[in-house]
Length: 173
Image (cartoon, helix red, strand yellow):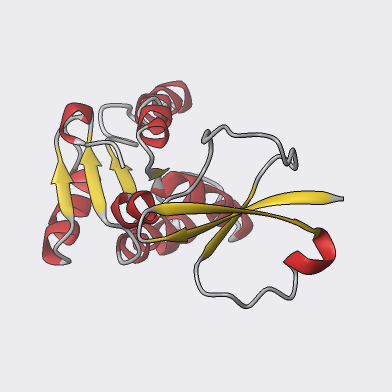
């Protein structure tokens, strides 16, 4: 089985054709991307460059979760969907979108939470987002009033993260 490998050096892509058995032990400096396997292919689509790696950001999307919902599950779901609606445009701009909810909610369930705001929920929900911010490069604040989202902005600022108020401010990687 043949694979294309792209080596990234100073923004230049150098193509090399080799078999899988030669891919695994490769120790050459650089970043490698495994392409489609067509040695005659010349498309750059999906290729990683050093410049895109340097400018790509992990962006936490912060918005209301419970605010304005009276803990109504349908309204909470609408809030999450609103935050999620920003994820694909951020991804298409070359960045990694993330919501704290994507990590918190499965853990909250595993911790045995039976309702929003109980001890298991409170142990995990906001603390995991704060920990996540330590790995992020930026925060996008969306939606309406939210003490939790405002706290994510405060923490993001204290960590020196870029703060965005709308998608138009986020440049492509």
